[in-house]
Amino acid sequence: MPNVNEAFIEAAAPNAEAARNGRTLALKNQLVALQRSEDGTLWLGRCQGSGRTVYLCSADFIDPDKPVYRCTCPSRQFPCKHALGLLYAIAGGKTFHVVAVPEDVVAKRVKAAARGEANSTDAAKPRRVNKSALAKKIRAQLEGIDLLEKLTQDVVRLGIGTMNAKMAGELEEQAKQLGNAYLPGAQTALRNYTTLFRSEQGDELSAAGREAVYGEALDQLGRLYALIRRGRAYLQKRLEDPELAPETESSIAAWLGHAWQLRELKACGLVQTDVELVQLAFNTRDDVARQEYVDTGLWMHLGNGRIFITQTFRPYKAVKFIKSEDSFFEVAQVQELCVYPGDLNPRVRWDKLQVRPLERRDLIAMRGHARDHFATVIKDVKSHLKVPLADRCPVFALAYRRLGAVGREFVVEDRSGERLVITDAGVTGEPRSSHLLSLLPREFLEDQTLIVRFRHDLDTGKLQVKPLSVVTESGVIRLTL
Image 1 (cartoon, helix red, strand yellow):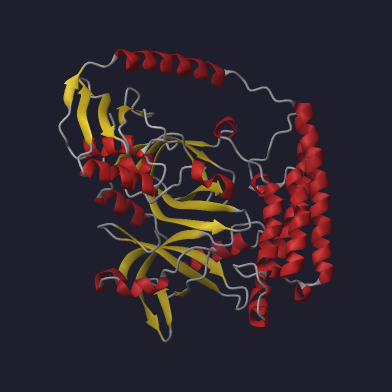
Image 2 (image 1 turned 90 degrees about the vertical axis):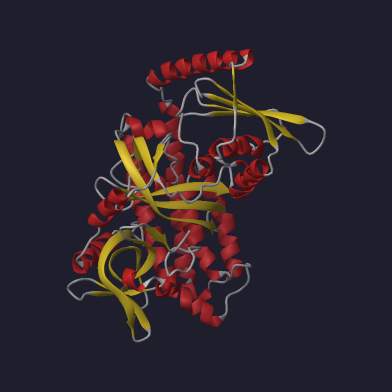
């Protein structure tokens, strides 16, 4: 049985509200008739509903990696607040009376085991691909690339100075055809350009507001042309391949909108085994271009120090039915880590994990992976940014000598005296963080590790860094949650 603590429960909860409601049920002692099996794999309880109905809930840990939560309530959340309340009762050390496993649960376990064996057999079989249908899809995508090129050329002919909210809306309507051509990623790339010319409310920008986005608009146009060129070459090459295999050496497939499945990543050998990860920062933002909420976590590989990202996309229309992610404060032990094709900070996923407490030795290991010469980091970032479709805000761990103000600017300095200016600009929707540095205890302003997101200021041409967290030997101080 896994260690059922608050971190475990919050990770299992579909959202923060469900976890809060479950905790309330446990605190108010509304979970009664608490029982457990002798081997500790099954936990049972009853909870009074809002009416006369009493709900029966259980947590089955017969497979510790895949707990099963059951409840007789009508909630569509999984697990529901009653099952979460049961977990909080376990974590709180409440008394559970030992009973035999009910026969209906034994029957359900037998059926689940049979389904698991069947699924394992199916997974072992080579997946058959309808190559004719896939080739037809790729040809449709090539036609979509032609449309994207036409729309981009129209934008360039009109000029940045003439773009307004009305024209941006009309362009987005035309761009919907890209979704029909299996190019949702290309559609998003075009929306990243058009949304620059509207306020958050969809209104016209002021003259000053328009001028402020011109540099970003030029950069977005450059990315669109790079996407057209590289996307067309990739699709044509894939069409010529007898196996029609997606490319795994770059992120171009994801840029076009390919949704990688775990089985695909494993089949391509994009897997790391027995990995321990620590979350460095977490943020939920509203991505207007994608029409989705995006939950983003930044994680460090304890073994080699590489920084990965996790992302959960929750479309506006389905946000109630997709579990939101949250901050994670312990060590995630992942048996199979699937790594997406990418560059400095690739996206990762896993299907199951074990949890252990974050220890001082982990923090020392994290600090040991930090880069202590800013000049070499700056060189690496500049080389990275030369690639048109590279992530514009890569994340690094920097070992600094000191943090402090120089004039009106806050800077971070390495042991050789090299300095980087700190900024709040970064990924759209990420909260401000630089003002929190002045609140750090004095001892944390020297000889610590700073997790930063680099940003290239297009107007000045200078590199700046946005602080995300500070790693000390006693913990990770998060500046964004």
